[in-house]
Amino acid sequence: MDKKQLISHLRAAKSAHIKWRSYAQALVAGLPVNDDQVPVIHTDCTFGKWYYGPGQRLSSLPAYHAIETPHEALHGIYMQIFKLLFEVEETGFFQKLIGASKKRDDRKEQLNALLNSLIDMSKTLLAAIEMLEQEVMHMEDGEIAALI
Image (cartoon, rainbow, N blue to C red; front, side):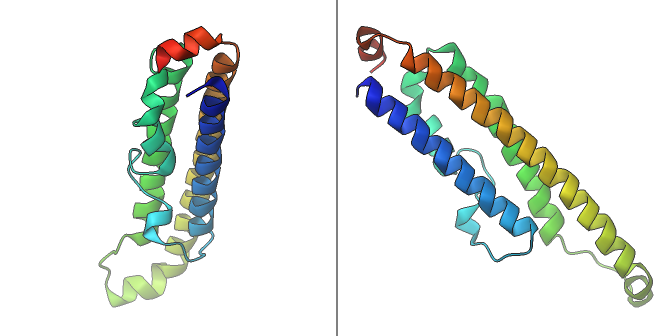
């Protein structure tokens, strides 16, 4: 694999992440999304499969390690969103009548706050991937050959 291919893989990984984020945003907006489109576990998404698979060839680079923490955190935030969207609460009849509107508003506020956190973490992750891409771009062919 040469520099051009590595950069192509990094850009494909960024695109996969952006697509994943759009599915998460759609889910919060109430649009139907298949479970497989927004995996909860960070190793199961397309980006995670690349990062923990072929991407490990870059693990000797400092910028590579800056990716893992925001990537895991991103999926942690998504897990909170997922639980909030799909939790089933046992409530009595009168609680449902009286508190349904307030609960719905509270849940909406929580979801929006979590979505904003997810978007911020996504930006952090994309910046870290960009740093890795820049690091690869500045490498000599011999250095890249040594990675592979």
